[in-house]
Image (cartoon, rainbow over all chains, first blue to last red; front, side, top):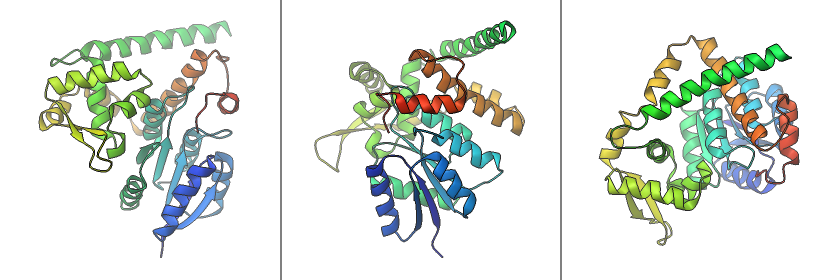
Length: 124
Length: 165
């Protein structure tokens, strides 16, 4: 059975690129556009992997990771960030890792790097 | 309120001692804190992020500052510059075996060991506090209200015209 992956990203272009690549690879992908929507989907379904942007309006990626870990879930999480004026990528990705993300991707990244990170996360 | 501000100031002072201690201990083995930071970055960065430009963007430092840091590491034979096979024009940075050996003696390990001595709930709490304080610190730097809740922080990021997604 194909692994089920939840993608949470408020950038429509980035969301499309990531989604297309993972669907091409045969994964069962659910896509959401912000942290609140993402957590709702997460609670309603069973996922093998969560890929979340860090900087998003509403509930951001750090809150998503925190909510998942506070629920006691061990599902692997990949955090993505390009950073911003309010929160540099260096800090947002370190915070993601500290909160329990198993892989971090610094935007922009190559699709090959995403694929490698997904494979590593799924075999943990 | 005054009690809370006083406690916050005391905690800030405590953190300043920790940060200063790490900063001071990072002037070691012929490297400075920025150079250690660059070694760590190159150790964990993906292929497409191992460039001076990506390092500068990641750390939010100027290109010339990043360039000087990397140049020092190249002179010390801890980092090499190689042509990027994927586009033929760019340069990819890589740690040398000596650079990788150096990271085995990373002064940040002392702090990592101190955190590892905490029990699991305390370590989780430390991670959450660290993430919240880091986020609040940048809100303060950008002139936002110090006492924002997490939800307010996210709302403010939405209104930040420089906020990149």
